[in-house]
Figure 1 (cartoon, helix red, strand yellow):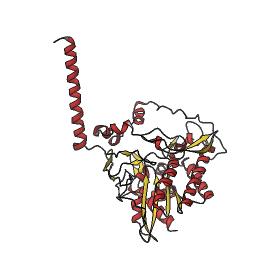
Figure 2 (spheres, helix red, strand yellow):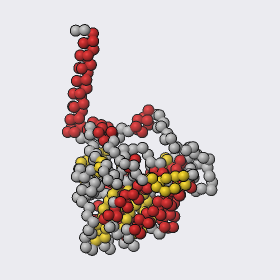
Figure 3 (tube, helix red, strand yellow):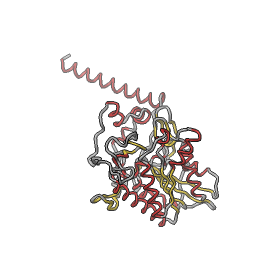
Figure 4 (cartoon, helix red, strand yellow):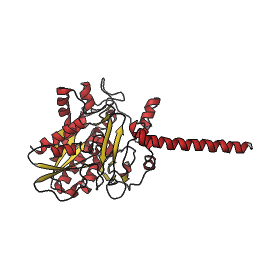
Length: 386
């Protein structure tokens, strides 16, 4: 055999071995150590969602194995389908949000929506939820107008978390972030809205068909950010990142610089709070604009509006202050100006932590566990019954 022939034979043998290893790996992570399932997206229509009729189990490390079901309208929910007609004597609640409302981390019957529906109260509730991972507050408005209002809710709940505001202006690159409505900024001020782009299937959708890759991505949480951290390399900065200014003593909670205030972390409540609060006027303007739009949506749908705001849970566990609560205060003030309801979960989480010192989230995942969802459901029920 010629030298070229030997090289080709060895290359063929290596490729065949690799193919066999890939097949064995796929079988192993499908039947022996199951990889997390993850539903395919539906890229048609005005509002991005999941393709209807899917089910599976979302897995993360050894702490989450939660069944999900995507209903006929493309939302993770225990209810097989959403219908416009309301049952007699029931009040309908629509909850709009991101991965906290999507709720893949808890069983499909354990999210705040399903737990809220099961709670006794002054009136029977029927609860629909509309959640998609990564969406910011700006996109909740788009979802509410074009999806939630179709079902004629009596109460419209926007579930807010601390990264909702900055990412409404500068969304993180992600699987389908181009399909989110964001806010337009001109000369440092909010100048309106940027409608979502036309969503298209992503190359990552094809990759996630592989059980082995899903096992790495979801079960073991191997992401680019984790790889950068493991190698001690700073993640690439985005082109619109800004330099942090010196402290502004006139702005409560403003960023004191790159290192943050003494004893307080720069990253808190899943947001780079030092950078976010470095431009207070823009963030305040964004919050006021979006809360005003939420109020207008409520008026157009003839429904009550509630803004439910997450707490800084890690700060509660550590017994420290959190500059992220500056965002809670800004939302509360905007809610008062625009006449919509506001419930701050931070004091509720803090009181519950003082009673029994049980966490509201998972050891390696900041999303609410069943207990966190239960507390949020109870808070909504109490507000509705006032």
